[in-house]
Length: 411
Image (cartoon, helix red, strand yellow):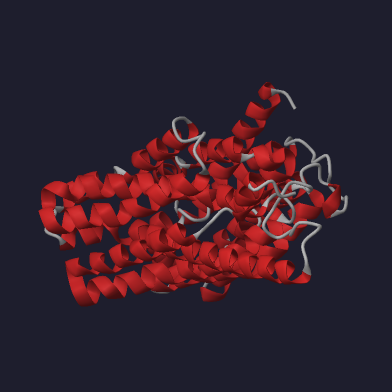
């Protein structure tokens, strides 16, 4: 595949991912209040329906990954453009709580096989172990999902109401997202057995050397389980922090004495910092092992929180920038770490399983961190800082066993 066609694939998938994130994950922040007023429910009920969507996506994620492993990303992502549209149309037609939850459940199905994990699996299916740059590329595009989605949803809602906003997003999925996803390259190994993948023979943690004895095989299995458990913990903790900050960052800053206008300015630095972190990963860090860059990124939320806690309001901008930069790189790590630690084989299915705890953590983060702010005020930041240390410790415990085998001359 030429560099031009590869770049075109990144652009197509990046735009489609921006649309998918803007019309699902970032939708409640703008439409929750008008939805609640019109449907006669509370705003927390709308967020509960959104949490239900995240739970559905967690439960269906492994199956979605297996489907991409088997058939490639193009048919799955294209089908999900239609499912996204169906969920948004269902929301637009809702007349009460039943329709509200039905719409979000359908969107949860789409989110299971239409957001980053599915896109990462599609790229790995196309490019194998060389997918790191492409993964970074699409996150650069989708990093602007809130930057594009929030203003567009706000304008549409003010002009025509929340129902028309949902219908507009549905139309974009059919008129823009569907063609973009369908024009992705067909996987050269779609429909073939897993061991037919051109990169299936590369060393990976889950496949012990052929000459290993039974005890070594048991040791390899134990090592794989340990690595997967640590990685799942990292993803769950970092997604909890990311979602908690997305839902409560302005409020958290205000609890520390930052005026509202300043808090909004500080919070607005997160998006550019995320993109800056991803650009750094794409450039300076691209030749560094993903585990090293993930460790650096995993320390930044806690580091920023400590600076803010000890130096107060003037350090608020430092906190949000460090948090955003770390989150930007960790988003890429969610795609690259499973690839480098486990290899290409069954990437989609494994990615789906690894992200199940993260999806559940994401679903509970707004509620739990909101309770922490209600109970502890500004000191709730100590909670997220401690969680950041947990993620950093887990990253420090991770080892790339496949690299060690290669350096030892293993096959």
